[in-house]
Length: 293
Image 1 (spheres, one colour):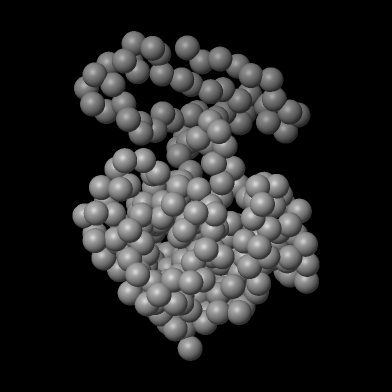
Image 2 (cartoon, rainbow, N blue to C red):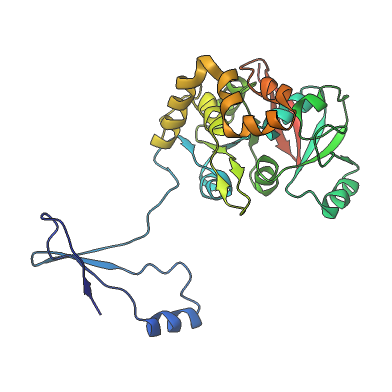
């Protein structure tokens, strides 16, 4: 039954129709309930307008797109020539350090018994579950990696996105290689999806993070093409913090957490800007380094 809601002066006689519980259940049983677009009827005076409630978030009208996390990856990757994953603290920074030394890095989303089995199946060693014990998610721990070393590197953010990416052109970028990643991406295609990974709350929900917004913006600022408002916002954030990157990473939530745990060198290393021409590229489930120039 239509229900009337209170409106502003210029929005008189607005009515919203909703399906009854019976019709919803019948649709679900028939297999048509998932993703069903229930129409809304808006009356302005005596003129009805029918419009759909579904809105597209894929930024398809722009060449340079930016969206957060796994949902952003799923929405933007299918319509983009190149996907760039950003996880400044610390997966993509660790990738740059490791692959610039010739390491082969397999991303994995979980740190459990399945990770060990996955490493064995790829003739690779498994990174330590905690920083400070051999090779781990700590970028500084990977500076001694030798050429040809095969390592499974789990993380719930950047590695999980990389593991889920089903795309032929997936790159990883951070502040260290932002301009190099942009240059390689621009040569590989004209439509580019930049995906900041963010962090994860204890509930498992996505926590957008300042360092990944800045990292995404650093790449976007060097990309040619028409940028979506989301991409423009990330680029503006980078420009705002560009001259204070070390201080900003030290003071953001993720940086403070790592410093408190004794990993201040990881934060300092991640804050280095444009010191690497290496770009980790995902091929056959593993990242290897490619020189952008």
